[in-house]
Image (cartoon, rainbow, N blue to C red; front, side, top):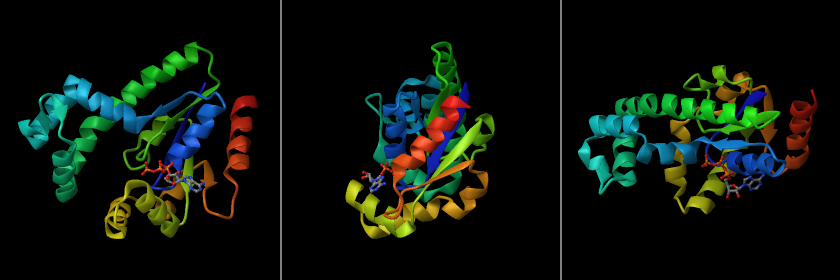
Length: 196
Ligand code: ATP
């Protein structure tokens, strides 16, 4: 069974593409939502965050997301520490989940994550799909979806690596602009992964 990474910058459309793979019957691991669950439920993450950010990061047992976001976006060192704490635990969780999917007979599974290249996680996967779209398109989509200002979205994009920096690591690229149809691109990859 192959383990396939699916990544892309904010607003590129990776969750939408991941949902399409799921519709085709492919088991999809959403790293973002799994990380959120693990952050509240895994004692190693809870203890680590308490040390990095302070005990106030948990209020009544729940993560204070606003506080955590304000701390890590203002302090790169803390952002790195939080990533180094959370990413390996989430990836181990993915590995165990993938083993279960393999036992259940899956041909391949998809790990959807905003960060797979920057933390070297792609090296533990069999191949990587990069979802790309023009920056302006990504800004407009994210502003609309998250009710964020242009400036806020541009700041998020500036914090991430660019499509051009990610491209050399990709085995496949799915373009989600207004000139390419996405379904044929998805089906092409799906056929190759299912029948080869
Ligand atoms: P994030 O990293 O912020 O979670 P993402 O890469 O997962 O973003 P999506 O949430 O899939 O991106 O898509 C962002 C927005 O763009 C959503 O509102 C989605 O409906 C829309 N969108 C996704 N793909 C396309 C597309 N091919 N054409 C037009 N709109 C799209």
